[in-house]
Length: 616
Image 1 (tube, helix red, strand yellow):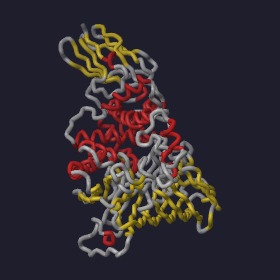
Image 2 (tube, rainbow, N blue to C red):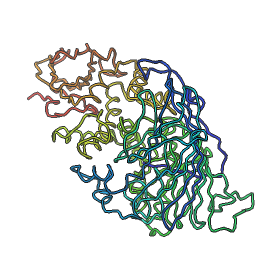
Image 3 (cartoon, rainbow, N blue to C red):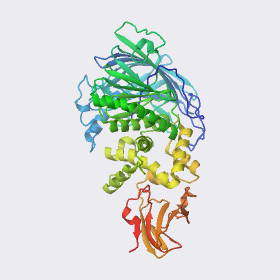
Image 4 (cartoon, rainbow, N blue to C red):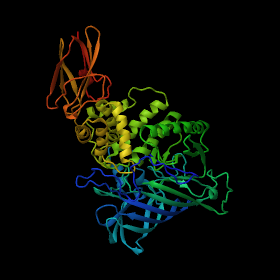
């Protein structure tokens, strides 16, 4: 998942959420914290000047950060992430990869073998608070800063930093000289303020997973050899001085006669900034009907098949952008960039980095997934370290639906794959609870299934519980209520409850906080009486298809009593089932020939064999 954007247009934003307030940090009221009803979030404005030595893969940076404390607390310390420090022998990322049972194939033991000119680092040379030097210490990938004067609630402070950095050899997400020959994939490249919220500071070391950051505005200048083309988060401010495909045809170019060019980007209301650079980038722009620009940067020396795939990708990306805007919420920026780089696919603000030597289906699929992250990772900016399933899972769910529509595959359940993976994980005994911190799963396989598979099933199974229409409406409400914030699991649950009128606390608890499984069976059928049993610990409502001996068919819905309601359905709704009762019986009006539990296969029942009865 990754993201980048370039444009000749102004900084106009079409904000999707009418209730998203000013960037100072105070927004609408919610119940995120049991002790408070007022939601707050921190805010930061970055101004950075970066001077790149492309031959040495190093750069010098000057950063000014204006940090606003919107919390009710007084802060005597702040913390920065120094992600590049993970790419050094002996780092926690290195040690974790050397010891985990199933290491990421892109990492393995590679960090342990990096030479001095291949490692990554960010070295902070000086840091001042409102003009006065402060004490700081680098501890792995975290910079610990002791402030001279606490930042009071509602107060802003200016933090001026000078730093040096080296770009690591491409190992994971960021780096230089990727396997496909991309010179610079610059994600997690700058000292980044850690998030402070109602739970406190979030300062996990960078080991493998995703990110959590402060909303703000970025003003970034990148000076680099003039033969490089740069793509990055935000809007390009000086296209006439660059002349690399961004120029306004109505104005003359004014490219300075120097060895370096300075690319100036501004990115309003984002929580990260990524850029990539390569001397062989080809840059295409597709303008959508609504005026938004889609930028595509890829290596011009790819073979003919891959070059054609990148051309064919462009109109499909526009279709995907339209689909997500219609089915989640309106995309609020005026551009998006798809850039060849990185080590797979990774989303960032207003852009993504993806590897480019792919068959077309793969290229489209990874673009669909990474683009969908714009909504669930960047606009609905949940804490990915603690709740990766809210990002990866929801992204997988909606991108699966989008791909089914864009490619005209009318899959009844485009997310059927995770259900198969779920049964495998349950039967293997390697499943881990979704509340596990992203870095602390026992295996990468368990993390991947939980975050992507079981996370997508959270929404797919909601279609079964509250109905597909309510799930679709709930997803839009979730976006409208929590875009440009940091939603929690309870927030998505409440959005679905408000739309459906159905109580879902039991579902959030069982699916997210336990490893309880769903197993319902047909215990017996005698003439007109059907008896069902709950074998697994997790309760669910039940859909039944009953075929009678006269050939007629009747569908029944048995709500779960804890739901305090039932989904919209054309089925016959009968008495609800109290969870504590292991069996449930009811009598039909005709003699029964066959019974099927959940013909939709949207309920994650771990034993399908006892879901069907056929009279002999």
